[in-house]
Image 1 (spheres, rainbow, N blue to C red):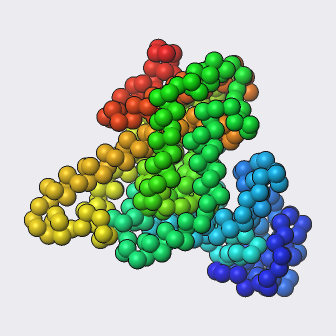
Image 2 (cartoon, helix red, strand yellow):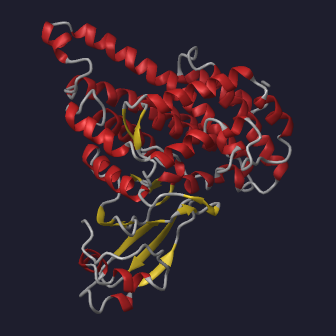
Image 3 (spheres, rainbow, N blue to C red):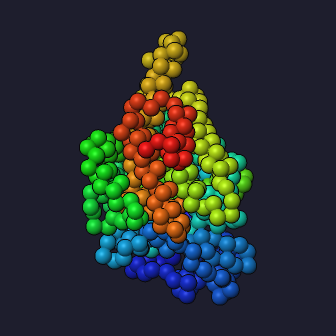
Length: 429
């Protein structure tokens, strides 16, 4: 799995150079088609990367196909004026290995990693599509909520001091602590830039008044900085770090999570909040995608997905608490071993309540940054009518503000579903 090719100075791949560059790598040639010495000429290579940071290629040969992902030494969305370290591929590789161990089958298999060339060769997922694209198209996927609820609970619990042996976890914490540049992106683009006139911000025409109000909102800015403090200071577990609907690939029966290059040790609630924020944004965007008919059913589906994802996460987290709590936190010697299972349940409820409140805070600021910051969501951006897009984004901004500011006073998902419906229908301001 580790690289076997001779070391060379970093050079970005292209459709033309990839076969010659990787054709001599046995792990790749045996996957796509061999023998290695004559297969590259028959490979079909196409670039499919449409993200903000990396090159992504699909390579097909006589035997099969693979995905090749290579980091670039800058932010692709912006250009070489914003440099980034190639080492982010190292963190993505290690995160994928750990996620596969903690929730088998949830991520693409990794076949080869070259640290110097910052590239990973991994399983080609087909006929999977990006979850965000499926939601824009109005597809109601039956298993995605359950799969994502299980993935978040298992990876976040099993990567924490609730479960891991403490020396192993501290060594892991030290390894991922060097992912500083990508954490810096999150710390600025998510928690700070949306709330002042940062140079790279942009928003839909028609939102000017709403943007001024949000940037003058003291309670909101304090809430956003509180969430930034939590993000920066709570090294609770290995988080994906960028878990949104563009980082999930789906079929009707399968869900796979990709792109964990932002992985670091952070708050348990962060991944869950980012994920649910993207479902809420999809909900508010649906009126912008009704050219072929009403999306009322899709809106109901999305609210159901949000509730089910949280319920599955909470249930699986509780199950792991009761069956795999072998780490140093809330040790069984304090509770069950003394015949006091009720104390264990009280502690569990306390932990889950904290995750719930933090999840809402993270979700609220994520909704704001995706509408007001640098990197926007296709859910809204693909609505060509700017006036219609603004009408969809306005209730999303209001919803994000409410859950961020009032996160400690919101008790249940059904009250959030009611608020989302009222805002979407224009019945509350």
